[in-house]
Length: 497
Image (cartoon, rainbow, N blue to C red; front, side, top):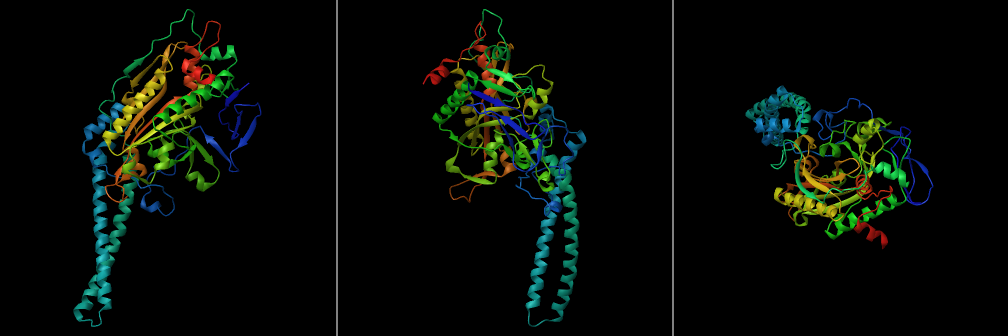
């Protein structure tokens, strides 16, 4: 019998898994480095942000990127910023909000003053060299040299003082600025979810529909591990169904001219933060606790397929404008810290709150806002058409601002109806990010010479398939009165070949 196993990583740093074929189990330790998944309360981070390193720490700490710190437009309209924060239900004290523009003004003023002092220091040094090379030194030259030495000493002291103050402002200001959310798209609802499109009719059954967990137990195709309610086994027809679903979605994406990429499971803190996720919050990410001090200060985060899968590859790169827009997809595991926390308190095991799931994600990069919005519309249509072909009752909705990630401007969700639960659940989504991520991770485009008109990429990302959720929907919508279940016609045709 084919078996597919997903078991959450334990405190012993092991993962037990079974391949699709055969019953051999293997315990695997991830290298010789001792580490654990950090799932409890996080300790105080040694640095406020992973994206920016202030000058006094630059020599002791490695940094990956130099984020764009152009916040004039964001801070110019305080009312719009406050409305954005309020719509997203983000907390920022009124005192902090009022103080940010003044701190930003001081920061820019100190930067200009420091640049001016450094220019003067260089000019004094150049003049001193000129006087030193002179073969005939007059009395006036000697007096000028003395004055230049005094002024040079004064300038150097001023540089030290201004630099120290600039570093202090940076430590207070830059983390707050980098944590500000993206602007909201005009179509983003500020209330509840807004239904855009409804596809298919809800299934009407002559019997009381069962939940997928009950169907799986009756058919022997789904079971859950003792390690927790988010660890599950797909057996027999559900294991086969997983492979068919992956083939269906990836095959359709290839027909739509998407390019397949292979992506890592772990990411550095800078990439995670650059994509709008708080890497210090254990409710958002699973962090690897390293025993080595250097690695502990530069942790890795277990996330898997996500927007980071693509942005990590494009960090600090320049894409030729002629190659845009680009459309990628990847297939792999996604790890959810929220599912792990929620799974512990779940009343019953379910495929709807799994820690580890197989997903297919799509990504697009564009040269400007107009091209990225076209990609967003295209991706949304593709997702809707893929699920419509499966003859499952579903709907697309626009997500309210309060449910968006900090980096998102707009998100469309595709939700499937589960008759056993009598509710809709999210199966996929498409998100619009603008140039928010690119400004933080140095993702840019340029003309074909690679030199002129460098601009930041505009990003679109989405999840078109979450295997556990879709299998749960198929089991509930195609269940029969005897407890068995079928599958959509298009998938049956693929399995028959």
